[in-house]
Image (cartoon, rainbow, N blue to C red; front, side, top):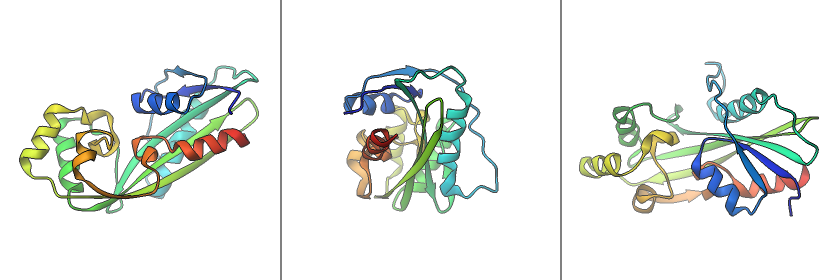
Length: 188
């Protein structure tokens, strides 16, 4: 059992849902953070870099019985980082580029108290089947691809119908590797 209150600094409804399902005592903290990163940074390190950046941006006091939790998720396909699309056209291009291929979903996590920050990342490998134009258009019209890394949610219609296989954590693909987070919280 985790006895500390979690300060979840995230705008993601999926992270909120996952932390609720972990049965943790938590409250959501809203903050806007510049999610840019150095161009020379290894793509596999970007999510963890941004999670740490989000953690460092939180300057309010953290009480002794609290832990700040920040996270960031990216999709890495052909060594190209796919974050959250800004437009439906960008979302469409992302989905088209992912169809029929494998990619990696990386979530970086940072935990912070008043003494230290620890961070880690998790990698999940996803194989997708090919989507035709009608399926892509349907997805773009019926769902909200703009708030998801890689423009898709594994827990929705897209994931139920086009994810052929996963190697790694399912919850990591949703935006938070809960099993690793729980273990890290116990040891923090």
